[in-house]
Length: 206
Image 1 (spheres, helix red, strand yellow):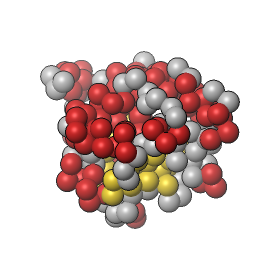
Image 2 (cartoon, rainbow, N blue to C red):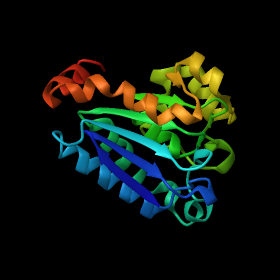
Image 3 (cartoon, rainbow, N blue to C red):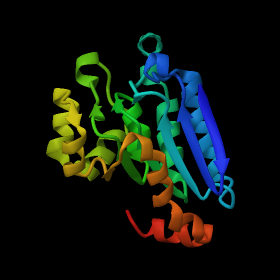
């Protein structure tokens, strides 16, 4: 349910459970975290990492049955977002559709987020009775400001792609047929530089 393609210095990771809106199980999250940690140990090979999804939804967040069974409070979410945030290479969330719930964490941990028109972002932790993952609110507030972060987390607001782009939550909007092409184009300079140079520039930006 997690596909990994390594080509030309770009690792493309695809959530591949489209029949379930790419809802995340603990096994999927563990595999994603393993890949991110492997990329961190392979700076010469992993020059950029792109996260995307199969189908028309990036991810609906946690599989609800798994969430009720304890996944909602599992440390694997923080392990994954922490591993992505710690990567020295450029990381891009190529959102092929809506990103919801806990799946927001991996997108927020990326350096850039590009999305297709019609993609929405929402994080219904208030309604579902769960807390957001510990690092997510600060990352969200850093991108959109504290008031808008509260709007997302405390009201369950569904943010459309145009609004998300205006707020700075999405950095670019791309047509579905060119989404991955545009993500790879954004990585062009990073994979053309030495890993140390790219990492040094990235480290200068809080």
